[in-house]
Image (tube, rainbow, N blue to C red):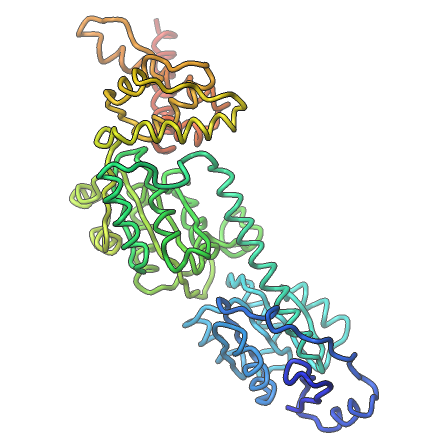
Length: 501
């Protein structure tokens, strides 16, 4: 490796080239291939302490130079002389970016790049080479290269290329997380609200557990705010600046959950027309929140357990295992110990998740928090709906404090939204219509009819969006789908009976 110093700024204004002395001489004389003068490099612009880079080049001098240059700027830098040794490193460690020479011994850089993409590697790849033509460059970019740099290159060239790659990857992750945030906007309050003894105890537990790397299992009734607590755990953890990615396991079809979590490669199954990153990829370095974990199919429970134990995953259809660095927070409104006894949940996964388990109090056990929660939701929805807040009288607060709130905080939130729309506080917090007194023999049938009318009314109000309807009803989408399927069968049976009559 020869580095021609072209300014007074040290390594940052050197020129990286191959080991051939005649090229260095030609460069020094200003001959063919001369690079433009280097621009001053601001060190603050090239610091990536949370990122990792793998340099793959058969020239030892080039490897050492790039390792030395990047080691001061990145969280981790490794190097390999060929694709075989690089693959060994990638099976053990996560790399956000590869700097890959094309002319490698054995398998070329472009050949290996094609294999990487086919096996689901989603990181950026910068190809470097001393010998290239337009056809090679086009082939490299079509194969999935993020950039293509000719040797000799200035150090600021490679640093700028790396900077662009990291910025693009960061924006892609931020956009993905933001889209998920916007899709669920308003689904839960934005923080831990309330100062009852139960909430103060929960808040103290969150501060302590949040600092730990352990998996956490949140248990509580539907609507108690499990995602809120999961976000609070993330925000108090060392991972707070990395993504928080939530997934409702009941909202994804069982045949798609594997791809949703782990991603897939092109051709893995019918309809897989391109590589797709999974949620573990987008949550890398951060937190993945798995809500309603009890709805996860047993086969997926096995795969999740393996990921938790080995810290590796394999995208659907891929032959490569990818290292993962994600903290898992799981939640359920069911008694998971009972699910284990019933054979519906793996015992080993249960113990792996419940390193720390946190129980969330139902709203009826902390009614002193109701006024504070009401003011919070009143402010939130008055802005969203463009209507003035309603006055909170002692009579209203006392009446609501005496209600049992089976839907917990979510039900209170929906009640406040409905009240602002109506312009007054309804006497009954529940949106369900009250049925007229019925004979005991007709009670079961009448309750089923009331339930169906209520669910259909809420679903219609959500314009058929079953995910939103399930959220408002405080049930999982899977439960809602099951209800509609049962009613469809009942209607079909009734129609057949009517035709026979």
